Image (cartoon, rainbow, N blue to C red; front, side, top):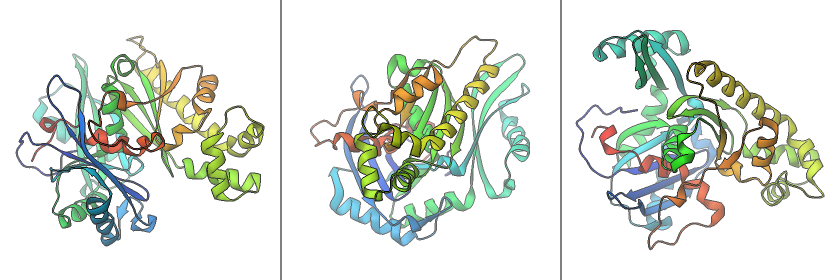
Length: 357
């Protein structure tokens, strides 16, 4: 979502992900014909109270976390001040719509008319962007993306206070889909993307491009909470069991399954809805969802992919973009921490030609 309205220049981008309680940055050097290499990365944590309903309400807290990251927690070097930033998918609106064939200069007006029908926020309070995903003699398929101005403006205010130049904003699931495209054959198959974060789970259909996204209001933290209550253990103990045993075979497997089954069933239900949507949309082409791609910290829970494969009768895999992105001479993060940088890396991989400066 390009919100700056200036002219394009081919300059490097800094990928930024402001999550539930942490801020992550990644800058990637991209040379034609060579593997993209991370030049710098880092993470800093902050109080979750700094962000309310997607809006940064305590900019000074985020600014302090950013200063700590740049001064103490940075691995490598960050040279760019131009930022491509993710927005929480749960606080954006994405919908694939079909409009009549028309001159491309008239599309935005048509998009606004469609947005009035689908988005429960007045258009004056939204930033709206779109991407053409297909066109034939019968019409144009457009991915409509919108975000509330108060949320985007709160991000812009923090970035400008840090002397950073915001050049692009997009839902975090769009960043993930960009990395899926890099993975070769896996990225060519119609897929369901499942991004399991701390407090929400984003579900998207990917078929050559991102088609539509939705959000389930539960994530890894909720699993920990359910386990803690059901198994009568502390949250710290529950988190440890979730990360080490998950729902894979163990002497605690049934108790863990009983605790988080309602959340897992909700997840399955939402994925099935997305599969049905794609099936109806792609009936003529015959393309079918062939895999589930999981990403995010919650996706690392042992046994989860096997559970999804069994329930949905589709192969489920973790997305591993790091096979295509090198850390060069930098010390990489620990294996369990790789997932924290996925969204920021996807933003850093945004082609500068797609945005304005």
